[in-house]
Image (cartoon, rainbow, N blue to C red; front, top):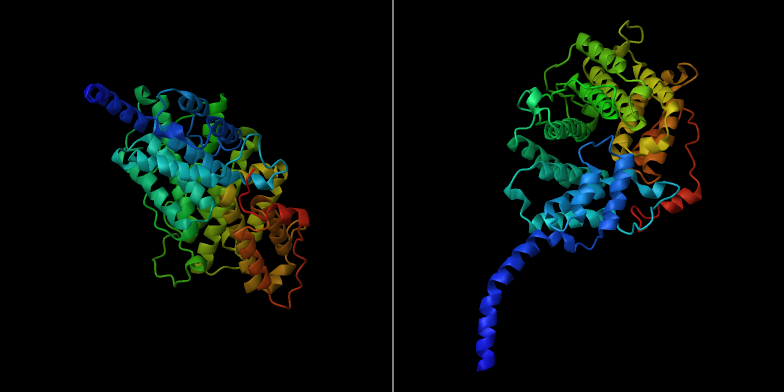
Length: 442
């Protein structure tokens, strides 16, 4: 009896302690992750070194400090896990000469599952926050790199919803609001603006984020100023194309939309996009490639738009409305790539593959419609020379099992038998072997 009464008393005393412990376990649930903080930090360093110029929306050192803190917030772990998943999916470590850093033994999928588990346990939908928004952006990039279009679209729409609920980019900044927080919010909106337009154009989806992002004055004399300068240049490429581009080749449907660009509009936009490209010494190499490739991609899309609406000519004085303009785009683009490394191209993941494929597709469109175009050369670069060079770049960026590379090979196989095709690239057995799995354990 004494023991029983003692247990009752002990239980009564322990009840508030148990309640406090339960609350603490919810707050610290993320720290019980199967993934160690050391592993998180390893991937965060990869992100800082190779991808921060693309996604400048996370302070890596601050995040490391938060992860190591005793009173860590599970939403920080969710964001870190999403960032690590997107990083590993984007840079395709298995394509590099030194495939895996020390102590890295988890996959992008492991990080994505960890992010989703933490979000489910902490009821992330209850409140809109910048952390939740950025987490959704990185989940979108993870899914997009895995060609999982439905979850990629849902994650992107979720991020846009958070931005709407937080009223991002709806106020004009004053000097007092030019804080670090405002700068971060602005960059998040830029990322959303560029990401949605890129993704929706690629997959024939409606664009919902219509508000133009603010582009504030930027100090050019600091490394951060240079970073922002490059990012502003990328945003401006999309500002020139505010109305949708209808792509009959990708939708397979007849065009019923009213004409939205005149010949003058097309010529003016093409000129602006081509001229606004920055010099390599004004941006990082990774940003330079992003701007360069996006410029060529949008120019190629605009040419396809023109071909579907206007009568093109081989003798027009308006170069963007000429038959051979896709070759001029490809030539201009490939010549500019002579200054950059393949690692910087690979940092852009699946988006780089899709843009490369589009540039090659527009050249092949002309070849299929006008076989005589094969004899046309610009500075010793013929149409198939350009396509084969892009094929090689695709294999290096996405690997020999890239879906985009397969699509390009299918298009090349459709060339008329009367056209003599150069041999397509043959890949060494070692490269085929290293891609025997899409995401190997390290």
